[in-house]
Length: 403
Ligand code: ATP
Ligand code: MG
Image (cartoon, rainbow, N blue to C red):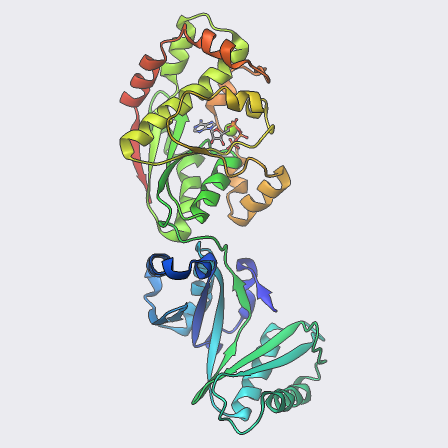
C-alpha cells in the first residue's frame, strides 16, 4: 500500500487531478452498536477543522466523503484532516467515466505524479458492480499493458512501489490516490474534559496531544514565576498551547497560577531544602485539583515520565499522594526520550519547547531528594500552611481563553 504522511502530502502534486476525499475512521470501526456518537462527533470535528474551505459532505455512513468547493482545496483539506483524532487515513479519489480508456489515462497520470524513476506498479481492480463485460483480471491486464506502453515502468505484483486501485461501480469508476495517514485514536470530545499541567517543556505538549487523541477535551494550568500574569503573554506558553489546539480549531482555558504564594510560605518557614521540590509539586497538584473541581474537569494530566528527572522517581511520584481527589493520568510515563522527541517533532512543538524559559522548577532546589519517604514529606510539610498557599494561589489565578 502506498502511504503518505502529512509531511509529504504535498507530493500529490497537481491538485486538479482529484474530485473528492474519503475519510476512513480508526477505532470507531470497533465500536459496534455504540458507534453513532463517535462518528457524529468526528463529522462535527472535521466540519469545524475545515471551516475555511466550506466543503460539502456527500455521504456519511461508515466513512465520510468530502467534496471540496475548489480543486485547490484538495491538498490543504488532506493535510487538515490527516491531523484529526479518530482519522485512520484519508484517500483522495478521482471519479472517472466507466471505460477502460478513461481508467488507463487516469492511471498513467497518477503514476507519473507519484513515481520516482523506475518505480514499479501494479493495477488492482475491484468490481463493486459485476455487470461490466470483462473480469477484474482482464481489466487489470489491459490497464497494466497500457500503462507499461506509456511509461515503460516495471510491473511488480507482490511489492509494488505504487498501487493503482480502481473501484468499479454501475455507472462510474473511482481511482484511489495514496493513503494519507491520520493520527488514529478517537475524536476529541468523546471522552470528557480534563486539565493538563503545562510547563512548556518538551513533555507537557506531548502529554496534552496524547490525551486528546484518546478523545479528551483539555484545558491547561501553568504555574509561573512572574509578579504579573500578563508577562506570560509573550512567552512560548500560549504559543505552544495554540500549536496543540490549532489543527482542531479548538479553544481552551489557560489558568495562570502564581508561584509566589508557595515561595513566600517557604521563606517564612524553615523547611528541608532537599524536599522543597516535593512540596512544590504537591502545591501544584493540590491547586490544579481544586481548579479542576471548580471547573468540573474530571482528571489531571501531567507530562511525567518515569525516572526522567529526579522529581519523577517512583518515590517522588508517590510523594504526591494525598494532594488530589481525581485521577491523574501520565500518558508519557513509559515512553523513552527519543520516542517523546519524535512525537513532538511530528506535532511541531519540539523547537519551541526547547527555547529557554524561566520555569518555576528551576527556582526550586537543584538537588532534590530522589527517594523521599512519604511520612517524612508529610511531617515536614505540616509546618507549611498549605491551605493558605492554595487559597491565595486560586485567588490570584488569571484565566485566559486560548484560540
Ligand atoms: P516538561 O518537559 O513538560 O517540562 P519535565 O521533564 O521538565 O517536563 P518536570 O519539570 O518535573 O519534568 O515536570 C513534570 C510535569 O509536571 C510536567 O510535564 C508538567 O505536567 C508538570 N509541571 C512542571 N512544571 C510545571 C509548571 N510550571 N506549570 C504546570 N505544570 C508543570
Ligand atoms: Mg519542566
